[in-house]
Length: 199
Image (cartoon, rainbow, N blue to C red; front, top):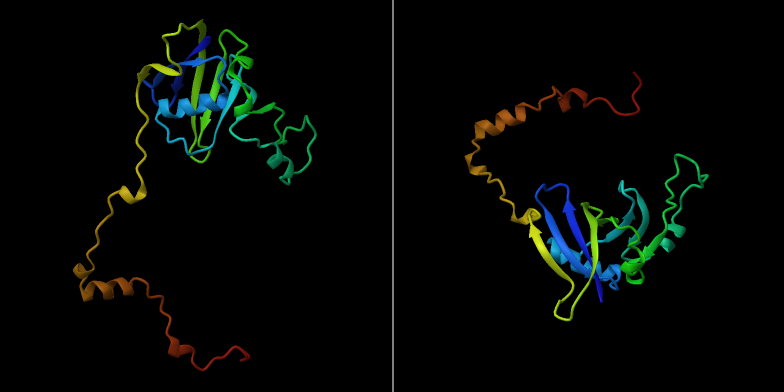
């Protein structure tokens, strides 16, 4: 059995790095499930892979679910293919469970983007290192090197809340507070007017 060695970086953390070994016959859904555990992600968010060239330009996109029907149903204006304002992507799309790694690793220095959680996006850069043949004693997938950790996301309910002591506010301070919003309006000055009066 052949396996692939990849190096994973996260550019928002300088010393973040993972080395992972993945069987060549794994599909991208299996790769995704291993990656989010290895990287320290929850795995509850949407994710996608993009096969890139040497300059990290996307050439193919591999999504967790089939989004083609959603795009067809979405109401969007028709643009020419060469229209610079077009939002339509011409990048070929695939589904993770149907996309096998060995069918997409075509370059000795293949680059892959792993994008996780589009509401709070995290982008990981995956560089293909080499293909190797395994022996029967090796277990896959595995992380062979790990450095750096993702920051722990703090829930709003876990954040310290400021304390406000209402009893500390004296009556004089309350009056001063109300006076600060006095705009000179006196209801009695306009009591003789109604909406049908002529000026």
